[in-house]
Length: 353
Image (cartoon, rainbow, N blue to C red):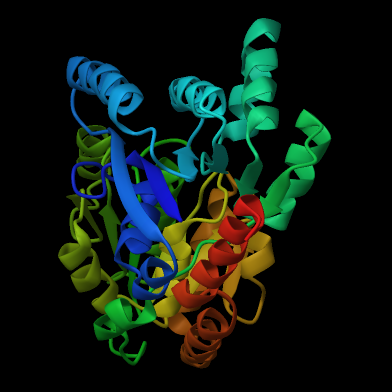
């Protein structure tokens, strides 16, 4: 059976969707079972580049990609949903099967903000798909309730532990060092983290936090300079895989104080590397992080966030236990093999084979 995976370019775009697509493309077991190709519907760039490429990609798709049995379409919120809606329309006109894989952390926020006409269009796209994949049980429950879906299934993100294993180190070595991975900005709690480090350094003067990601890089750098935190915060900017591995190797804890999330790849990557986790009580994060393997705070609670940083920087036994627990948890629940085994079952279910 021929399957076309559609979404952001694994090599020319950043973020979790591109990582998930890259892992599907490279998975030997999946490719032994199915004839899988990847189609790049989106690349990073300025507004003109993104728009031009998206139009070009859709036209090319329409005229050259009819000969597949199943289309696995990856989608985020806002413009991504409406762009991918055109793909879903065409695929169903061809009487082919389509799985819509929803990744956007702010999907319900986006839905609540749009007009009734656009809401109806979103629901139409979701219901027209043969299967909608959500990243967690929490998302599935909310999708079913909000959109009236009967075709939604759960597929939690999986991690390639072998690829990340070089970053596993005794957490004692870098106990006072932290990293955040992903886009820098308000939604990710970046500004809260800067404030929290400013508070924490009064107790832990040599605390170190690396901020890795695109987004508000220059704005965050200005804030760090304004608060004289240059010795405590390093604004790295976007980190490719090798740089990310280097950063993970240099810290004991991954911090993600987000206001909205699904199931963040950065948390799973941190867990796979044996890092303690500090994050917030949003999305599917509480399904993954508990007192055994991390510390959760309410989004926006800077004081609690600073206390969590201090706790991890000072409590050696705690981060050792978190480290061991996280490696074990990823192996048992969130390995990429488990994810792809479940994805294979979904492919077969939709294809009725």
